Length: 240
Image (cartoon, rainbow, N blue to C red; front, side, top):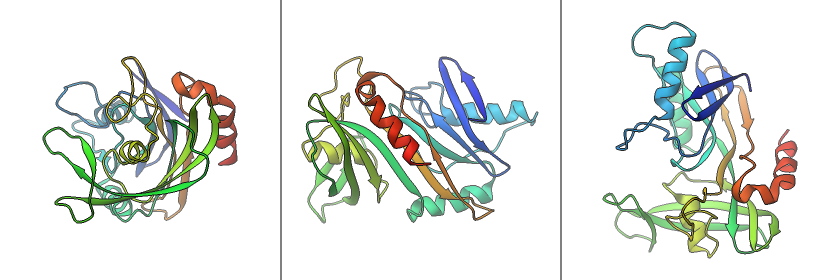
């Protein structure tokens, strides 16, 4: 971490900053961008951070090139120039970046498993469901889930995304019989539980230097993560 941003009750670690990109750790429950709730959002906070730090008058440019669901935290990259935004957006659209998530599942997943489903999003409710191939509006979703540890009827798993569909990890695991712990929307999460899904690693080509950058960040030591603290630390250390 090279810096930390305090925004209300949120602490936002800054992992990397240069003239073209800003890499931070999004806290859980902070929206990636402004939404209908009117709550504080990460994009606006980062614009304020750059404006204050470099005394930039007027509206600061900050490009949102990918998102995390509001209750999900982890590593995100933002673009500081329009050129960087265009190149990063193209890379994300082509899935040229590497994204790995950690999740705690309800149930015992005993072996790596590829998941491939067709997903449809309801524009009115925002809910996503599994559909038959060829269904109206259905998009192919692919990922691989690899168990790292199992304890007390729960599984810590590493998820590698091959597509970037809305709520993909949550819906596909629930459909496979392994809902995410604390997921009130697609699983059996209860009030007060924090969904156990975390964007733990992000690797991408720098938009101007063409250098491959890789960043990792561990989830908070709370909730379902606490039982797997040792395995999470070992996973983070293994990523170099």
